[in-house]
Amino acid sequence: MAQAMAAVCALYLIHGGSIRDSSGRCARHNCRVPQSPSFLWDLFCRVVDNYGDVGVCWRLARVLAARGQRVRLWLDDASALTWMAPEALSPGVPGVRVLPWSRPLDPVLLANLPRADVWVEAFGCELPSEFLARGGAEPAAGTKRPCWLNLEYLSAEAWVERMHGLPSPVLAGPARGATKWFFYPGFTPGTGGLLCEDDLFQRQDDFDRAAWLAGHDIPWRGECLLSLFCYEPPVLAQLLRRCAQAPRDTRILVTAGRAAAAFKAALASFGTLPPRVTVSWLPYLTQDDYDALLWSCDANFVRGEDSLVRALWAGQPFVWQPYPQDDGAHANKLSALLDWLDAPADLRRFHAIWSGLDTGPLPTIDASGWRRCVRAARERLRAQADLATQLTGFVQQKI
Image 1 (spheres, one colour):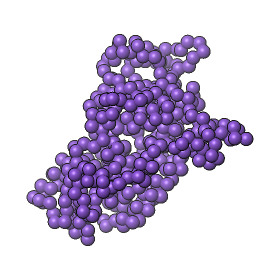
Image 2 (cartoon, rainbow, N blue to C red):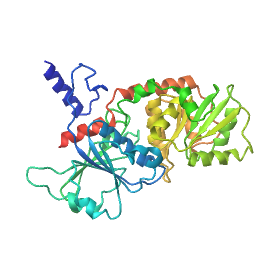
Image 3 (cartoon, rainbow, N blue to C red):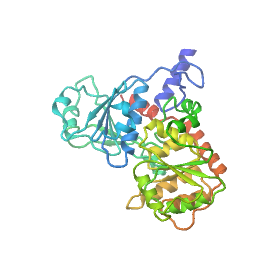
Image 4 (cartoon, rainbow, N blue to C red):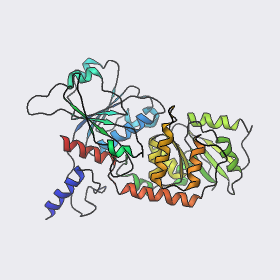
């Protein structure tokens, strides 16, 4: 009976279920669930802007490796890993090999690499032609082509469920006759899920906020803590005025880069910090320290893709700024996320003004109601299969 139940659970995992706990046992039936086969993955990432692309790909590579997969992560610019994930380059993470995506690819390197089981184009980047020329030809008898995935951007829009898992036949070039598969991360069971490490919530439960803040030279004395990771919101000065009027002192923890530059520009309109507001200027943080920052703060201002997911897992009130796009597509992405969250009207208006999609004064937000909203969303997500589980299950099904 136990063997039969384990087989059922293994089949459930292949089709995207999320029932294995951190010890590898089925959380529903307490049976030992067989691990997925170990595949060799080629994960390609072109670093475009703002570090989110390399951040997502490194998290994915690390989670896959922790689950027994082997990953070759190809990056055209690995410099952000020196502060984001220094362990990636030295001494390295078991199961992950970071390779240079030069143009063209190093022919000696390419010639000595075994063909992978899985190819992943992250965020619409296209595999190099010389890579396809070597590995994309019709395989020998008795073998299969690699499972070829186009890992897309994250969105809560309704069309994501319709597109997720669809095939895209390759009609020309050295890989002619192969099939790419669209794989969309997402927030609902009909999508590919979100990245989540197996030990994430245990680490969060064990987290010591006061110790982490002291260890990063943040002189916290009980004031309200806000983290700021943003682009250039037009109402930063208005936020500062709102903090100065709050019944509780506020410390704003400003992340390095664009957020720091935007904050300094907003400060210029004051000449000095308003009363009852203090600021801590943060260095570039590792991914683990950024998680700790989100856990430490009473509210988090986040941007883009990776920090949005981490804010959801943190379970604290947050405000999200999507990447501004010339065609206005970010407005639809924001609206869809707020719909999925079932966000109240005051929070919707706050987001619209924060992202420059509306004007006027920032509304007052019910922080306790916002926290309940976020934590209800987190529980829905925890009941779904995570991204790495669904990816390996999809690959196993195709291979």
